[in-house]
Length: 73
Image (cartoon, rainbow, N blue to C red; front, side):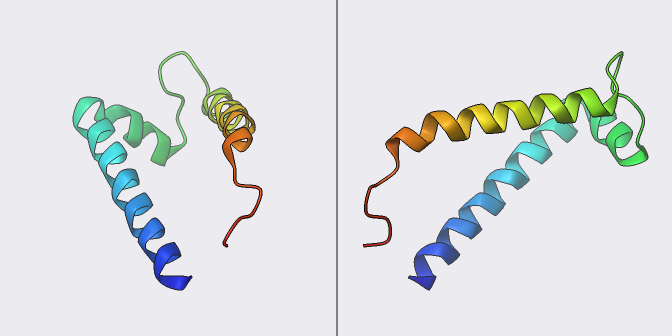
């Protein structure tokens, strides 16, 4: 079981790296403002984080319908 979860973690790491790299190349001010705690454009950082949290919760709720009834075996 551990090799499967290790592989999943490595793939997730590469995906995260790809997304952050894309954002940094396309709009570097977004990451620079995030690291300094400044708002991005006209939106405060708090609102942006709440939007990401809402999208994550909605995605988790929608994708949970496809979860296996017998996980891990």
